[in-house]
Image 1 (cartoon, one colour):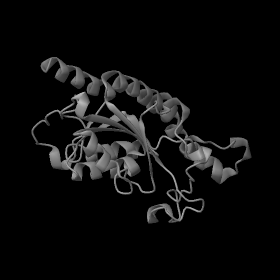
Image 2: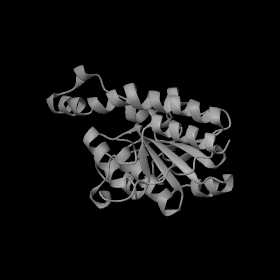
Image 3: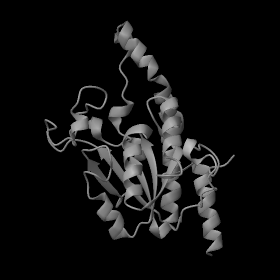
Length: 236
């Protein structure tokens, strides 16, 4: 089963197979979202009490997926897209003020999303394995969506982008908000499933099913590269 049939929600069980979005390198951008030091930091388990250790263990699959799958795959995809001349854009979530007063409400409420990541601190920086190349655009956002609180939409339009490939974290939060915003702005959107993660794999898979075929096309990095090769051959 390939991307055209996989992860169909209740709404799309009997829908025709989707048509592949245009993947001309000149009008395509790769958007890498929120793969920052903060989300990969881990405390010393020996310092944790019983409750904290349970929480630590619950997050272990996420960290394993990030280190073994997501970061290596994004790194590989960045190399592939750079080789093809695709615009590579990096987005990170960070406060522009020391006290975080510029953050959106969702980042100030109690709980997991209550993030205070000043833009110049180590925690808010993009992980070393995915360091932007010289000349690549880096956008700082204070919202969940990469479009809502930035001028990213304007930049994409100025560059002439029609298709946006989304990777990063978290599938059910900032990635989902970004995919929906891009779709509403009439971009073709691809979410690369093996270059993304949520807090749990169940959340990741559920969100992919919700987004697929209405807000984006969900596919693997291998399927994406195959489609790009296929379209390049047709237009050669």
